[in-house]
Image 1 (cartoon, rainbow, N blue to C red):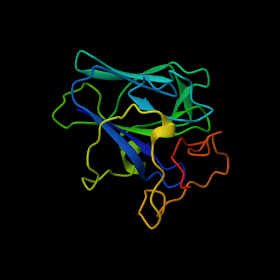
Image 2 (image 1 turned 60 degrees about the vertical axis):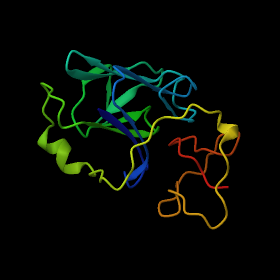
Image 3 (image 1 turned 60 degrees about the horizontal axis):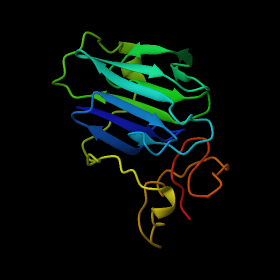
Image 4 (image 1 turned 120 degrees about the vertical axis):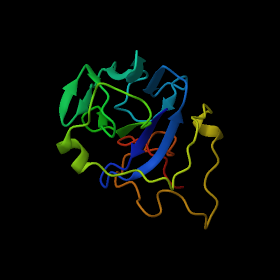
Length: 173
């Protein structure tokens, strides 16, 4: 099992996450046929592939604006549990978590582990939904959303005014 978590751009707190149990290849990008769809101008239609080769997961950058790990542009790297990748220099952050029962030959670096937020079990696993953005209803007034406690700090919105160009987060109306 692998979990991909969209993190808030400033506080690196979880905003949205997707859990996959059987897929050997996961695609992240703007195109609606990806497993994880992020609406950001800096994210390519097919930006990243996370794929399992034997028992080791790999991150492969496909996007024109690059994928970054610890501020360095990557092409292909093995997944370390808890690692955070950034799509483009100013794009969204994605944390990758592996199920503890998966054995990999890669151990997380102590320096990386110290700086990462821990994702608690308070979040319920969810599956990606491939629905057009226009069909997603706006939050009801007085309802709690993920952004009320940590609003997106960016001012650039997509043309449909529903998601942030910088981090891909859905914005309140």
